[in-house]
Image (cartoon, rainbow, N blue to C red; front, side, top):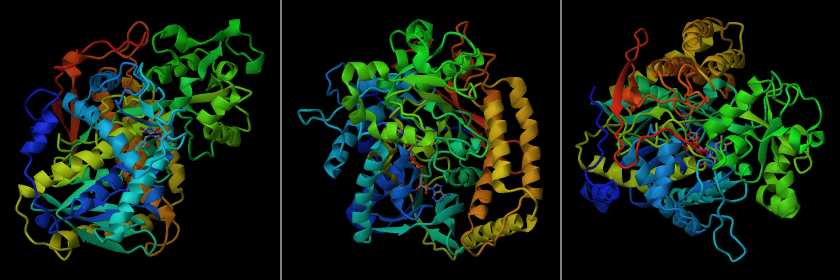
Length: 637
Ligand SMILES: Cc1cc2nc3c(=O)[nH]c(=O)nc-3n(C[C@H](O)[C@H](O)[C@H](O)COP(=O)(O)OP(=O)(O)OC[C@H]3O[C@@H](n4cnc5c(N)ncnc54)[C@H](O)[C@@H]3O)c2cc1C
């Protein structure tokens, strides 16, 4: 298959303008004739749905939660990037573009990243107009702070609740359209299949999570904004019901899945503390603005951190990366934390933690300033661990946080299925092999508010559509297949719970396809996953039935997909014989243990094609060209 990324010709600065001009338009009277399905009400979905409806399309929007406001985006803490250069510290669209390409270890598409940097400024204006209460400085101007991988302050924030505030903004736009009947909302629905008619995406099959009913919904195009799949690791910072099922069903219907092994491990999470835990908590990256990361210089240290003198502390990030210090990108910070723990210098009861210390910042700026900046995060830490971070350093350790992989999309954000668009974390996105902090919210909102409304119009205006509805045979077949799958699952009536098997999968993935990977471990995972999948289909126990509210069934359906995705992730990690960003192959590292890319053989996106249940997927390549940023070994020293 030849992948056509549809990157417009011309200088990088002009591509998006030129493309918008060249895209066909749908006239306002005709927009009323089209219906678009949006799956997901997080920042990517809510922004897309409200913008599409505002411009005249009819929209049907779906989510798992009882309210759009509970989408996982609400959890985002630290902030959103934009190249406004308000602090006058040297930022520009070009610098944001450059930092993002470099931060992603040169595995993202230049044209998309440049567009993202251009649009970043519009997002802030748009959200301010909606009333999003971004932090302001004493004079009333919008304040900024720094995030990893950047030497400028470009992150806009609303204390530690940026995602929530942005989501309330998007939700208010969405609510306006719901009230105008331009958006019809379907909460408590889970997508279980995508319906193609004449090879075009024309609808979806969903399960009503309250009544169990299987419903069919038709449309002229479908937008998937269904979030990331970090929960394949069981333990992650993602919301409990974040899943891969929407993207996975699209993959099985012909959409290619790109770079599935690119997972982000976030360096500052509250460490795992037991075997019955089902969720990990993030401590925002913004804390690294003021917090200093350290471990004791000696192995096996048992004193409390306050009792360890300065001379016996190893501020390893500041030492090793003097230019970026504690604000190195996430992949670099995570790997270094692991290295220190592997050396036996980890702290806490499990020895799998490092300190994040605010004493110097408190002495310098005063406790009130620190409270203002991070109050709610400190409170959250205190509530979870019972330790007061104003007095004693936080303990942190890396955890799964974000997935850079996802459905392959072209410059128009359309997958390889005509009419199936993918936005936000669900697409393989603009972040390459490592996402910089505060760039996911930027990307989701760029996709939804500013890109999709144009590119979907270009698609609709250049196609002829047969009149179809949900009585079409394809809908009936798809519905039947979905019902059969659910009944098969319920009939197993085995002995193991869904969480039990999911935990086992998570352990395999973390151990062999986590922060560090090698050929031997990946091959081991390739043996373990199929047998665990078989165990699932032979020994799963799902209490209750299908025609009721049944969370075990919901989780089992998601796990069935994770058990397939995990194998693809391992294949992808095995094939990519290089280290880049969050994908660290132990065989490929520099003498200083940094990721060693192989640009000659791997400067590309790997996009996987489903070939049926019993066949191996095939891989396709989209070469990446760096014409504006020079390919170089990443350095944060
Ligand atoms: C703890 C935490 C903090 C973060 N902080 C930041 C930050 O400060 N800055 C930043 O830039 N990024 C941050 N991120 C990342 C960022 O929050 C996410 O990448 C982003 O919010 C994803 O948005 P989304 O709209 O793509 O998906 P989501 O917000 O995950 O929304 C997915 C939507 O799809 C729906 N859905 C999913 N599957 C189905 C299905 N099968 N059927 C129907 N509906 C479905 C869900 O119900 C939901 O409405 C953080 C992430 C975490 C975990």
